[in-house]
Length: 346
Image (cartoon, rainbow, N blue to C red; front, top):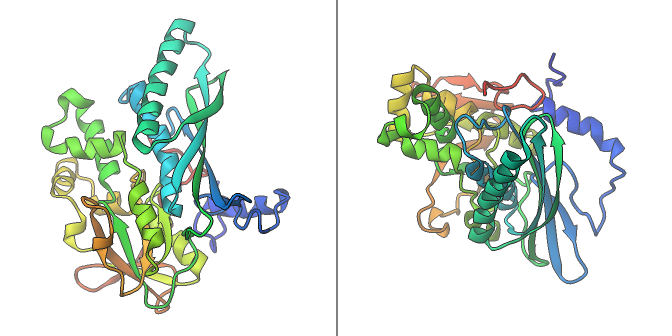
């Protein structure tokens, strides 16, 4: 049974609000931002800001060993944490890794699997130049990779938050949301790598090996035309409802056809699944969704990063709506990945 208050963007958001009185947290110079955004902020005496974020990657909830090997699992587990750093506009600084392994697997297999997980973690660490600084190993009911990541920025650096949208802002997104969900659908239809048509391999890669937009996040945070940002871990719809709620405004989505990859549209026809559902509700894209004024110019982003305007913030509507090709306004449901709702098929 859902505990979601209809005024909140999700059940998870509602629960976090109920937890706030139990955190012993008060806004201070040391901790100007606590739980509730993509990461918490710690102001340091040495002229530095740190952000902290944590994520759990759970077998048969977030991944399956039926279609991912342990090196891929390790890389993705780290990537999803780095995406929260990207959403704030910070570089990763260090990570703590806790791995829980299933008790029914023999020790030799567990050891090799953990080594492979760390090979994936190490690949991410080397790519963005930061270390794993500690962690823990424990036996449990299934594979769980739990990571706490710290990001760093100069004391004068601007860190973006979910709040900050201004009147007249447009909604922009990096990459092609829906690609990860389409990739998972391709795996469901064809099985793993050797059976998937080459034309769908980029979609599969989007799901198996997402690339956090660290460099883009830093560039966006430095751009004064960008006012708020969130990463797309739980789907465009849910993240839009969160932005709308946090900023007390409405959103009208009106993405153009160039927001959808041709192979995603083709796979949609093969599977009978609507690519618009992947775009709105798929999640696990780890792209950046941000609010920017009319002076924003996409060329500020690193070369190779696609960015497109997909909507506007407006007081003409409450919550989130989608404007279709005929101009009809359709309410976007509060759907997407929600940890307090029934699990997606694994």
